[in-house]
Length: 310
Image 1 (tube, rainbow, N blue to C red):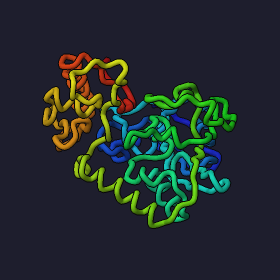
Image 2 (image 1 turned 90 degrees about the horizontal axis):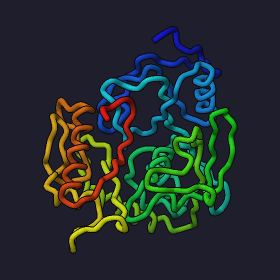
Image 3 (image 1 turned 90 degrees about the vertical axis):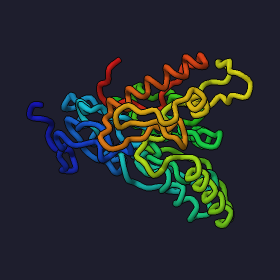
Image 4 (image 1 turned 30 degrees about the horizontal axis):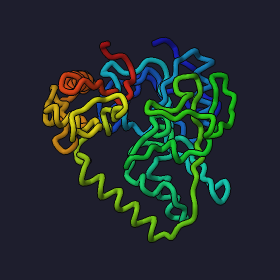
């Protein structure tokens, strides 16, 4: 592994061979070659700068949902962006650090009587992760709520980007994978009665508890819903990944310790002895079953970190 990089400007050092499984909702995968946490913008920018100086590739990790870490781990530096808070920029805008949890942001807004995010109560992961994957719930995408972003490019330059200049899509925002890192996001809000906000949040939480296997380790939705315009399905078959997997007979199908949930077919759960390789193989089996049954190619929502068989 070599001697590794030196200390960050704030005095913290990278941790070598750091386990990642406990930092994910699936609880699977191997270690990071190098690891550090960043709980604020200054720490995140410092970690990115040190990685550049050391020539290390960087992988960002948020709340650990919607990711599958390879059993062999992740090469280079993994920066866990977690923590930080929010502030009200003006009467209609709230700015949240990328590492703040979506649930934490929802609570922060409700406590201040600000509407716009309350129906996202119960969403796992961080603001950065949700925006990177353009998280969806109840027929809406989180990109619809964003009014602006603060990002850093691969040279460390920070810039503000208006929402109109960002193309939000089902695979994430337009700049994802182009060397720019999300630092914070602005969300549109408006005043609302606290009782109304709490009622909406409780309704969202209750819906999740009824329809998702929250008692078992999972990474959230395994696949994105296919584009209805590109799918030709039999009458009465919803154009939704979970429905297609259900009708293709995938509920309860298992590979090793990984299993397709019998509560919601778009959730893959990890039982005793499960490995990341089990989940990866099960993803492929699910795709093949839906392709055979309906001619639809499901696109994984899970982000693969590290190396997996092609």
